[in-house]
Amino acid sequence: MSVLVTGGAGYIGSHMVWELLDHGEDVVVLDRLSSGFDWAVPPEAKLYVGDVGDTGLVEKIIREHKVNAIIHFAGSLIVPESVTDPLLYYENNTAKTRNLIAAAVAGGMPHFIFSSTAAVYGTAGMDPVKEDVRTAPESPYGTSKLMVEWILRDTAAAYKDFDYTALRYFNVAGADPKGRTGQSTAGATHLIKVASETALGKRPFMQVFGDDYPTPDGTCIRDYIHVSDLVAAHRLALDRLRAGGKSLVANCGYGHGYSVLEVIDSVRRVFGGEVDARMTARRPGDAAAIVANSDLARKEFGWVPQRDDLDRIVSDALSWERILATKNWPNS
Image 1 (cartoon, rainbow, N blue to C red):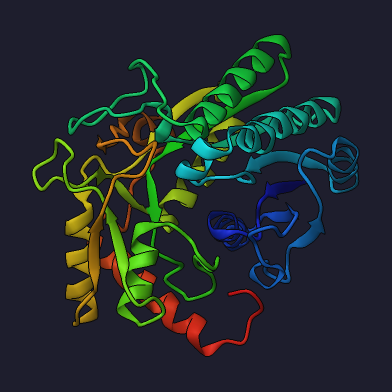
Image 2: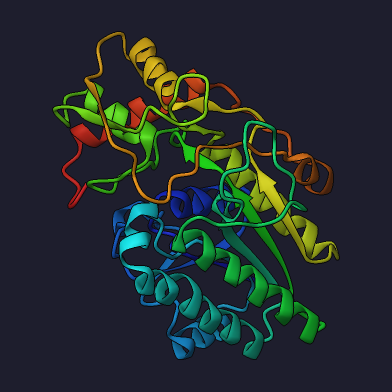
């Protein structure tokens, strides 16, 4: 039996592949390499270059590799881009995931884990948000993910041999502590990635989008979760489904947030130098503050985060940026 990881050549997906391999799983990766890299896929995993919306290809992979679980990361994820090009997000994130789910059902694949997002909540304030609050996405990105959650809910209700877990995670950051993979996409918009690149001189300066939000220092607050803790939660969620656990939606975060300025200060502290950060106007679609209540994941999965420390997250991100600078990998 194998696990299919879609988007497994990308940032979070490649960490997931390593996590599964480290725990003895057979892994197959499907990625069209639009923002991922073939070199990010470990040689022990089989890579198919293709689209998750290609039902024929997905059914072939499920059949030939005896896939009994899909962990789905592939999709588009830049909030401001989703505001200016919503149809792209409803195609890549919603329509193509519908096709992937249809192929999973047709292939008798029983377990599906979906990469959802805290963006389904919109602005929730500084108090940790629970899964049962009203969803109110403020961008097509968040809406496109919420629509997939609805599709999964209805599919699981219609097909008794199909169960899923949708993990709503918050701001993913950091890199593999062993230096095997990290965020490598040129022009990435992740705050800690951008600040780390600026510190190391890969960018001349960075921008802070808005300092007039209703937060203590006026900048947006997010719950930053180390990517290694996140993929561990996915693996534990898979273990739960295999043990007979029923479909579930759960948050993945640490339960406390940091502002943009606090993150930049952490990068300065860990790097030991200046980061040129310049104020500019707000971006469309950005929520003021969102922090996770992850009690459900801790209870249901037995998930115990190991890297809940902002400076550690930043340190791993900076280490990966230094590794990238020494490699001659294409498009990194």
